[in-house]
Image (cartoon, rainbow, N blue to C red):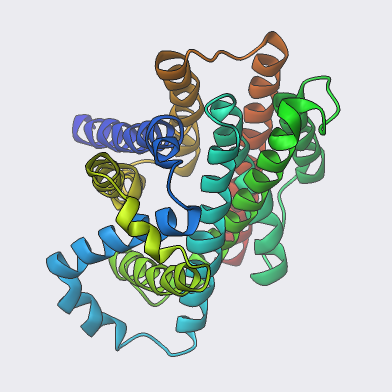
Length: 315
């Protein structure tokens, strides 16, 4: 019993650690790269971890990839296109647009990801939607609006940049949700490490082509020593490092506990934004955060419960 509780505690700490790293990245690290072009930033953020993984276990994963059904490579490409390229491009651009003023809002809007993931899982994987999904998803989206704009008209907030940033954040949430759904397909025939390696490999290739096409590759000469230090820290921590921590933690705890641990992400985002940038949410935004997170929690829990009931009925 004690051994089980210890493992549960370790798993919770792993997921909390990953969530805090994501919060730190969104508020403190990635925004410090604002002087570089967005495609170049996203390209390097994926290339460095991929290069590191290639050195550590590249040969093993290439062998493993040869055993994967060819149709799965379509899903790997879609994961890289949506979860890797489009999603990351959107969130990085959103963070750059708000100029350190509303970083918490931009990062918190990503918490709407489960809403899109569940809808896409219904369409693509034919998974049934949990109870009261429409109600809770509507509440979460409404709370997201008040979190972003409070009682203002969208175009007025922050000279219009906040409106653009919020749309990009929602695009990122949709794209990351897509990556989650396609990820379920590839994990049927691949280990997590193989999936992670191929995701970063495909994304690096896609982003190289985008960077080349947009003429951003030449901007690499403008990168400073500080930029490379930030890139390296992101790659080792909030990049592949946080993902590995998160999935390692899932081995020890249940999904409902993991959902609670993920609350460390918004909490740490708010805290870091205050410590490093002096920003603090208004009372309306605090209430919106609370309502949005409660809604997301209910969405994930109801959907998980519904799927478990469906599995037990089929056994």
